[in-house]
Length: 434
Image (cartoon, rainbow, N blue to C red; front, side):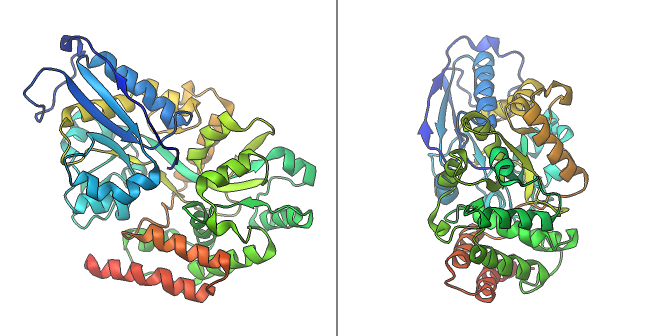
């Protein structure tokens, strides 16, 4: 879902337009047949699974689109999240970009008229045939900007979920087995604390801490609660057993030493680097870290497992490709998206530590990648994808970051934090007429 590195790279390819390989041109192609530019934004690092797959997609695009220059700009997740609305409402909008999925992000932009309706292209190119119903949830939004129904405003080409990464060497040294139940999990955390080690790397300044908070809530939740919270199919009691348990338990975990008391100021990147450096034996976050750990962890063996005891986990399709309404080269954007859905690109993504949505499963040969994909398939097959806690309302990401920071710092009681996160949710429901 997120890679926070910032960089800028430009890739160019020049040749004759006749070699386009028979790609059908969209109705909104500019009349000029001269040199053109496809402006591409995403926030995946070059060493991530998605970064590797999309770099290959750029090469294939260049080969089939002579006379087109691909201008790629890698943005930070926070950079796009905070400024997307303003940028897309200007003539500086890219032609195609990666954007976070969900009501508060892609849904909000679709409601504001800033994204192109991709439904005709989805049907024409058969993207809907490649994506399972659960993956399609985050691609479609109704007139309220609520996901799960309506027009296609995004196209996901990978999936993701939250898991527990662990340092196998540290577990072995502490005599800790991989836990299969929640009780075994907390017993393992206690073992590390007694040995003088804080077990969980946490980034409280950004998204990771709220994912732990949500995993705790999901340990007490049913699908009906998730649908009520995420899709507005019922009322959510923020003082009910789900969020009550999450808030009380997270605060308790800080007191017990499972989580550093000063982690409220730690960013996601610094959290990941601390795990890579062997400082913490456990990191709870998404599959988007997988390729990074494959590349960067050199000094110990590591693995992953699903949150013990839960039937559901934070997870969904990956972020989506969107085409801004103000994009100047929509036909090229559609062609690029189409290439990222092809089997060879999907297979590369799968063998690089990502979770493809349209790969040939027999072509996934990397053992770690197989483990990653098998765990995702277990969640998906059991209807275990519960989306992410910051999705329901615009601005909710910041609300949850602040709320969980208060739990870490102890500056507010769990009860006060629940009030704090309930109010904006209720305001959003009123705004959309629910």
